[in-house]
Amino acid sequence: MADLFYFLTLEKKKQKISIDEVIKIANNNGVGEIFLNSIDNDGKMIGFNKKIIEKVSPLTNLPITLIGGMGKPSDVLDLKKYNLSGIGIGNYYNYSERSVVNLKKYLLKNGFKSIRKTFYTYKSEVFDKFEKISKKKDKHLEKGYFVPHEILR
Image (cartoon, rainbow, N blue to C red; front, side, top):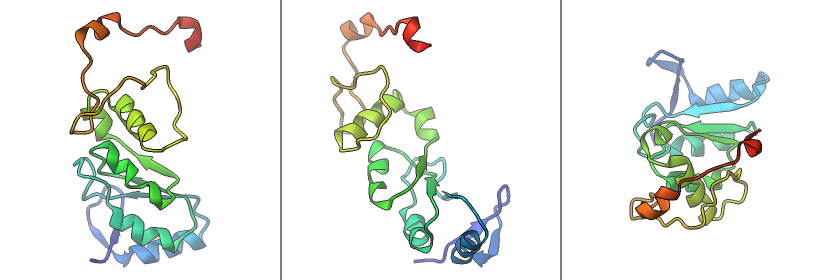
């Protein structure tokens, strides 16, 4: 595996210190959480960089949030084994239709238990071969969804 190096925010210039050394510095200087972003995967929707979490996770007991690369719901499922404190998702929500519903439904269907419930039931959804929720027939869409105003307060 190629060595991993860190980059300063807003600079795409490799620093002369390895990721191992950065984590060591974080561990010894009161850092509260590590926020990892794979700039190679960020925004490309090609999946998270699992090599970086496999490298960093054994080096620290600090909470770790991983971002950069989610393209489909199974990308989140693939991270379940890594005891992350958080996962950051951006482009997937911007460029995938019904993405929040789609992701929650997929994770619930695949054994995730701690997902914040919404007013959407997720019960009648079916996934297509691209891991997206299949379009409902127009007769269902015409009914629409209504949440009484008093519930939203």
